[in-house]
Length: 293
Length: 316
Image (cartoon, rainbow over all chains, first blue to last red; front, side, top):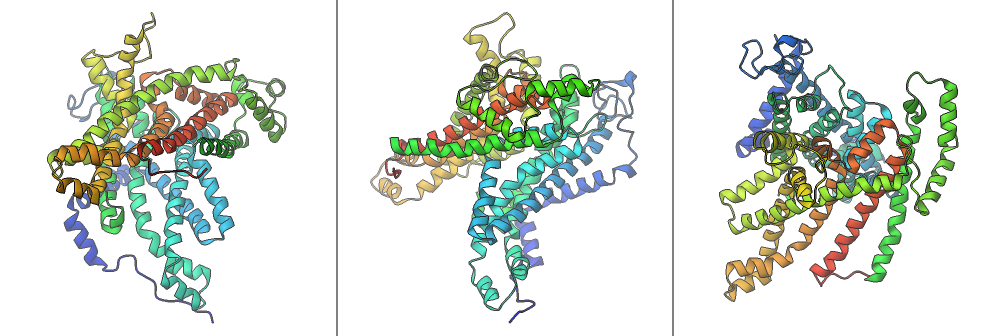
């Protein structure tokens, strides 16, 4: 007998009430989540904002400190470019790189985890040994090697950071699947003749979603730092395009005379990464109390 | 124990082979010809072909890999394409600089992290305890390269306490000069991982605190500080040693960013240049050395467990 559907365990059992409880209990994480959404909205709508062209060079007004000129509230960089405009445009790139690389790592990592955790022991052994080999590499050096091979640039840097992040998702997903696949409701679905596809999509995936959501929320901040690291080393976005890592690298040259050029993008990376980590901590406490620190 | 160590050393070989093979494949199967990079965009196809022949790059990949492996077994890591020098001494010299930096950074993060974790437990739920938790969060959110630049800005440029960059003054200098150059990069590196060590120490101590023998010690009237230092601490070492071991590997691999900020002449910056120049022998040699240290540290941590907790025994 084949069946089309059996009831699955929902991700949020109490639905909206859980969200309200989370917001009231973890108000810091909730307010930071709202701020991050607002920041994402600002950087996504940046072409519509009345900002100075971030690449417009003005050598007369170079290295102006913040608040010195009304048209450049956060000052200018070594080429006289507007820091505020570059920070917002750079934020667009940095957030995009962080989100996309975390998302790509998650997609491929969870897929590998599914294959390893739900497949035969032999497949599991092969996939996990591959994961072990990648994990034996120092994270940043492997990313540098991949960008070195593919060539410096925004997309290649993002891809490299995504690739080196795959193993942690694969491990997490595999571990979660190994525990979920032994649950009674999965056994029941199997006994009722449900196909592997149905079991995976309706019963296993929804029940491993919570730890993965937590991991992604914690990982976006780490990925923003990692992609900024590659840009700082000159392997990410290329001039004149702004991103926070490359702006920081530029600022290094003017540290003695114009410290704001390096300070502001660094503060932006730190602030956003901290916000993502706090939101991730809050989500972890709410969705997966066993992992609470 | 000796048999266990020998067994682990033998088990290291497939991991190291896997690492070297992966690096080899990444380097050789992705676009970017070292001969083209070395000769520049104006190079003719003939000169590129001749250089490929000289470097041995026109042989099949598996032949190149086995030739490299055969040389490695004999202690020869090959010659750098770009610097025309033997890779072994080149990599070893730079590794020493990275090792000094990494171990100093780790020593700072371990000492301060363990002390912070200990004090947090001694003043549980106090402001200090919350500060330790915040410190861990700050550590994972802090880009090490920015922290390094800020350290240079305040402590070198503004206060003139430490040199801005490098490992030693050009005129040379002794241990004192090295120490002055080492403080900022080591503290920068250590600060980022200090929070993690503090948080692990705190949670590990709290876990041991909940055990029966601690309750017994308290019931017998042992003073709170003696309970913490004599009974709790010695039983809480295992997770702390594990995380410190992991941090060493992490710091060793991530040293490239700190080295770049402080112009520290370490292995990370050598590897970065080698990757950009597609200097295959240097990349392979460097990765092999880091991988060997990484697995050796893991082994050392496992062996250390036995000395820290005599209840742990490995099957031979």
